[in-house]
Image (cartoon, rainbow, N blue to C red; front, side, top):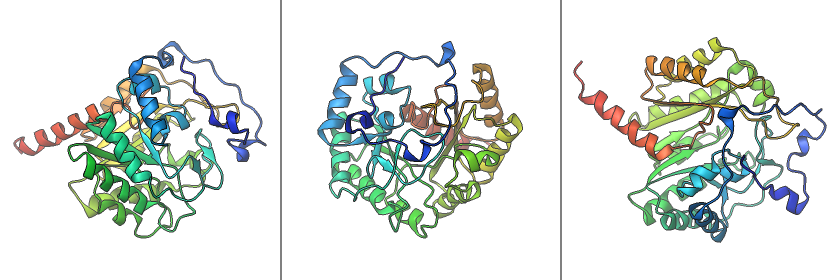
Length: 321
């Protein structure tokens, strides 16, 4: 099993103060297909040291990703910019919540240095939600992309942004950078938004993905959801249709894992054959790339998946009508 060390235990500040009043729910025992090995190895240690050296945060650690051992062994760390504290309080997320500090003006360059040192062919940049900022952090995303381009021009860049709710012009700022892949996760089906993602709006997120394509139809777009939160199969299929209506290229589907007893409960563990069925359905609906498995996460195998995504589009462009 992967052990994630919680920084909050060191500084003794509550990680999720907004969840303290919630009754505990039982943490279900993980089935065999969910269990992973603890992070060990020289590659893992090297990646960790580079992240620490440049004073960076990663979603791998902050969100308690089960794939951290495998990914960091291969130097695939997903950088989380704009601090480690989120202004939202999503019921599924293990990232710390509260009032964030000021942006670090050196962070874009520090991220770029780390990417260069890790020798990444593909990098994923995500962030906490920063509702306290006028642009939601859009300019910081753009600056980070530009800094990486300057130091590692051959590295492809995937961004996973917040929804920029009520931040007019934010998407346009990010798109001027531009990234190679624009990812924004829907996370769950619309019926569950009020309890799972209360600070967000399902159709706003869809419009954001549609807006990216309207600005640049050639931009690769990506979105993902979790299952095991209480959704019905028909609802998942409807989300697929909604994403295709926004011309999204790449869909990820993974199992929700409950971080603590205070977080949203797991409704059930979805069996691997159900993920395979979802994957077949999604390809049938026209997605160029689909990753659906219990351990799938937005940035899991992102570089290899991006190569397949580009190949799928290229094949589509040369295929006869």
